[in-house]
Length: 168
Image 1: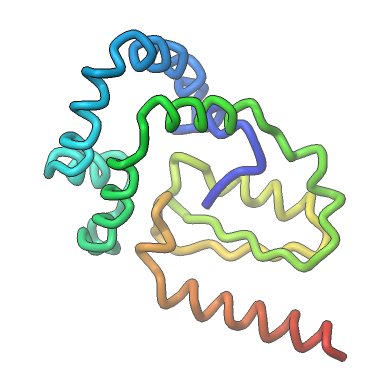
Image 2: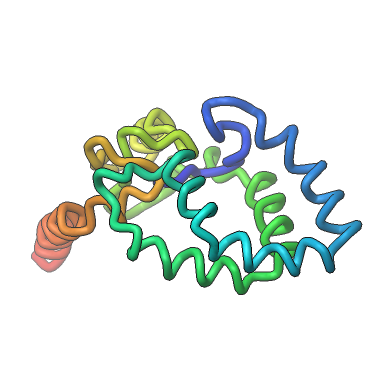
C-alpha cells in the first residue's frame, strides 16, 4: 500500500498534494504553537476518526480500535517533522532503481486505495524482477488493517515458497 516515490504526485489520483503541501508547510512554520496545540487534540478526536473513514478507510472492513494506535502515535509526532518527512518523501523517487531489486518481492496493494493507487503497485510489479502482486479486495490505504488475516496468510505463502526455494 505504497509507492516507489513521489507520493504526492498521485495522491487522490491528482497532483493536489504537491500544490497543497507548500501552503501547509508555510502555516506550520509560521504558527507552530497554534499547530502543536491543535495537532494532538484533533488527531485524537472523533472528528479525525470520521475524516479517516470519509477520506480513505473502508468502515465495513476496518475496526475503529485498530486505527487508534496509529492516531495516537501520529498525535505525538511533531507536526513540523511530519510535514518535512512528507516533503522529503515526495522528493524521493526509487522508480529508476526498481529493476535492480535482486530478491523475490511481494507487493501489497489495496483495490480502493486512493492515496497510492493500485496501478502504481502494478507498475512496480512490472519493473521489479521476480515480483508478485497481491491486491487486497475492496481495501483502502489502510488495507493491512482491513484484511490482517488475509495478508498474514499471503505473507506466509510467499515466505514458504521463497524461503523453501532458497534453501534448496
